Length: 175
Image (cartoon, rainbow, N blue to C red):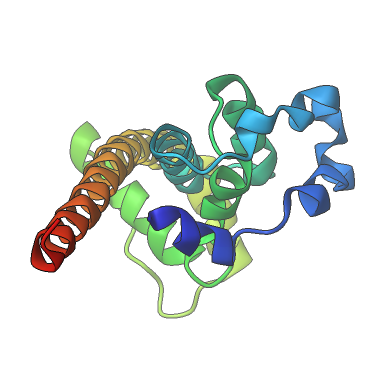
């Protein structure tokens, strides 16, 4: 099942429960449902993680964790997916979000500079934050829905495929 694949890459729950930055969740973090790997919790985690990865805010991991707890999503997966926007991918992802926002608003866009600088990013955020956040919200929702639906579909396919293989093997043995 996909469970083995995810377990291989996810950190142990005790390691995350002891993390200082998640203390604000208190005893909520000890809910065993936040650590289960099943179709529903993983699908919810995909949606939450992908959504918050697209939103340009500081401490995305904390917002993903705070969203995963009431949604009963797999906490490590929701928090880990936020790292899709890391220091290497962030400029390209947020520029794409910005371009989508300008397209939706019908406003002219800044061109990407030859050299990315903090001054350019600061100026962009001061003057063009509306298209950035609109594009981020739209792409975040689209990716969240796609992540949820595709995870559900993949999980169902995987389980069905394994059942078909077992049934074929059983029939081949003559049972």
